[in-house]
Length: 165
Image (cartoon, rainbow, N blue to C red; front, side, top):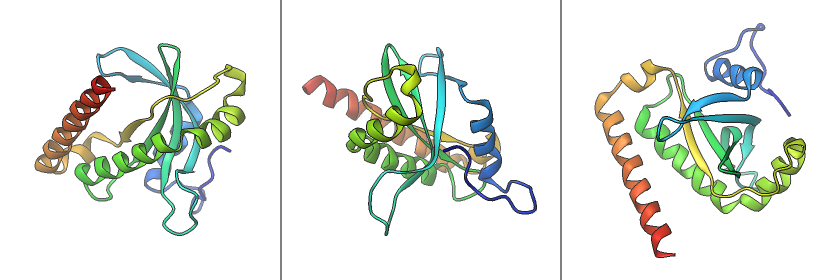
């Protein structure tokens, strides 16, 4: 569905600048966990992760990474100045968790509509991404450290859960 936010006087405001770049340049290369480049294909903006009209949870952008033959939805939270890195990571963890529980709808809506030419049949797992300029992350080193620690704890918990299954 492409870029859907209205600009004011033809100029993008705040997050719109990054969102527009994502859609214009998709797919983009991002650095993975072990410094291996991954290609992120951004397909949707303001993607709903729940069906409720009240309290709707949206991710700013939904995209996909094909990693080792598996298509992973990426719930992306975009920030410029709003709140801080801790808030952004917590918000993105909520989005990622909802995306994991909503894979059937993501497959039906996004893969079958936006990615049908790539012959991707299913989505597995869901990943999260907080995308912001460097100055956003540098604004509060204490909150950034706490956010990075939270990410590491969530990764450990996920590895433990996977090994128990």
